[in-house]
Image (cartoon, rainbow, N blue to C red; front, side, top):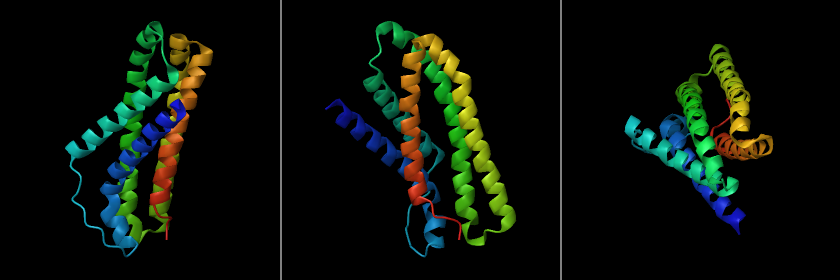
Amino acid sequence: MKRTVVFGQAATLVVAVLISVGLLSSSALAQAQTMVIETRPLTDADIQMLRQDIQAQKNQIITDNMQFTATEAAAFWPVYKDYAAAQHAIGDKRQALISDYAASYDKMDDATAHSLAQRMLAIDDDTQALRKTYFPRFEKALGAKRAAKFYQIDSRLSLMINLQLASIIPLIP
């Protein structure tokens, strides 16, 4: 039963991510696919609010799955707060990349494709470097086994979000 609840929370998280990214670039991508979707552009305040909602849902999924003791929670959450802030900075880069991709979709040339691909690879590298950097801190806070469990959860959430993003972003024409 707990897995069902967590899955439901994860699905809600994915929907929130799709809304935040999808609305950012829906106009350019919709035009490129000859679909007409009219949306109002998201403001910075809208994006910030969506990101806060997504982070709150991630926190709840982590809490539900990790079932921290009071001691673990006191050690984990300060480290996670820093980790999440660093993830947010990487998310800013991903969001800018998706927006740039949408803006250049109709006029994609080799130079633009190369630049976008290099940025995507750099974002992937940054994400992996962040995980490697923070693992010792989580391990110190929770022990190796519990830190590894957290990384499984974090990885699954990231994979779900990335899969959903990939499913709505069209391939280069």
